[in-house]
Image (cartoon, rainbow, N blue to C red; front, side, top):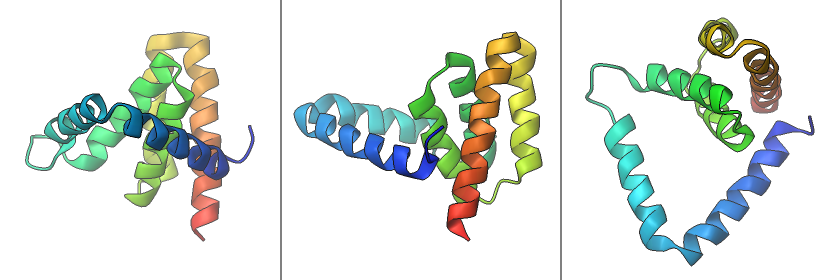
Length: 116
């Protein structure tokens, strides 16, 4: 994998270009994300983001993995917490879950190192 931090920066730029082209849809998507992941529910934000990483792995969405891994790094999620969340994706997805979990863990390690 190329550097996860650099790749996510490139993706964010392209997402910004698309958001400018489709502000209504992307604005509505942002509202849905806030309604889903905002504070105040039964699950805290950290848990919701760990679920998001596991679902991104299950969906094999590399941009989603990178985006949510960045958030969990910023939230101070430990490597072991991430591994345990990823184990659920492996349980449900088998080999592909393992492969994308390894990708997510590598991204976590790179992003954590970049924050030092």
